[in-house]
Length: 154
Image (cartoon, rainbow, N blue to C red; front, top):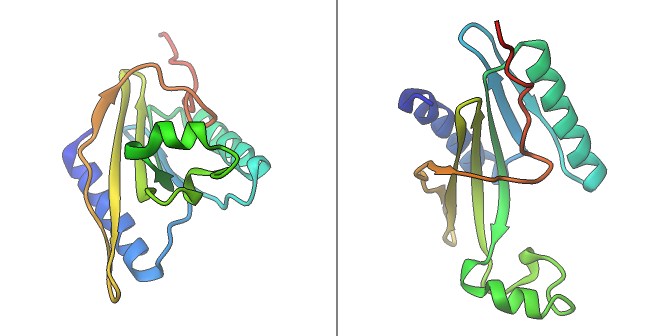
């Protein structure tokens, strides 16, 4: 992914988040000539499944070569084992006292995947999103992976 493309998307996401105090999940989908956006709302797992299917359908229709999925999330890296050991006490990562609010940037192309986690920093009067560094990842799994159609061979 070109740095300029990510920088532009990041600034738009940051402005949206800082203006509206929340970020709806969004996927930026495209190729060299066409670009599309799919937005959504996650009320439950069926909403997540429907969003993933909408992204896959759009990617297929426009012969996409990339998808950049962006979503707010919670992580608790310093408390992963405590979270696992106490699922009855913390049914969700968002319930854990050591959770961090983040925005996940997940880029998928036919040549690989990259992920960046931007931390959300809140004070009494402000909120901001810290720009992440995208890092190569292998073996990603889950409903928001493998969103691209199979690469066509000519």
